[in-house]
Image (cartoon, rainbow, N blue to C red; front, side, top):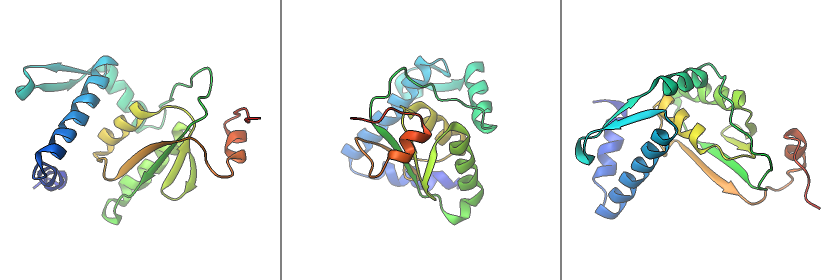
Length: 163
């Protein structure tokens, strides 16, 4: 059995409410990738086929070689994007590759498995998850209004300090 199959089957065995939430997240992710032109979707809901486009292949190559650049908005919204991950020792190569990808994209390491970035990066994280065949259980991202002692981070990213 494929390594992720057991986890997927476990998710499907949960109560219907949780399953519906899982399906909704998957659908939202697919729609976001489709609207960005990274995948095409064909077929009816139950028999949908998702195919990566040439643009999607190029983005995946950029991610693989650490060349992906996350677009920076004109103004910082004052929120930090904090990524935490817990990749098992059995997947050490994946964990190390994830660290290289985050470093290459401009994230700053706070702890071994806690990284921070000041701009929205949901699409980048979705693509990295897909590339590394990793799930939400291994990588979680959240938005924080403030971080304790973030002066060094603000200087690193050249962000204006709040008065």
